[in-house]
Length: 95
Image (cartoon, rainbow, N blue to C red; front, side, top):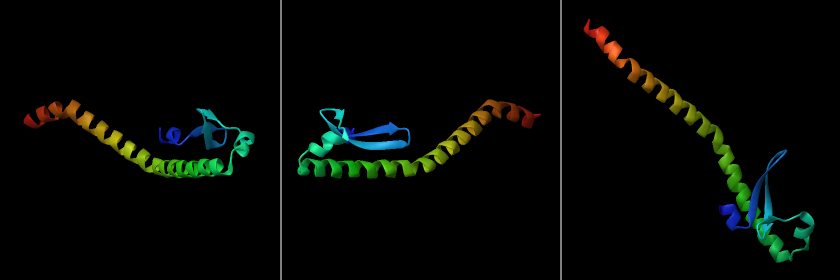
């Protein structure tokens, strides 16, 4: 959403993600971008750099999020197993 507000698109390409300028909701081709006034080019470039930095920051956090997700799944699995077998263990302790 933030990228769109800045007239910037984050698109998936064969080589990864790319940040591209938008005009009226459409990705600008390089030849059209080059025809923009220098001020408009600079504004687009600054906006694209800001979004690129945010994308890189977000992607750099992905491995940590993945690790946290795995740990939560393991914990949930242990809790579910304990919930399912707790009454059986309790019965064995009573005997």
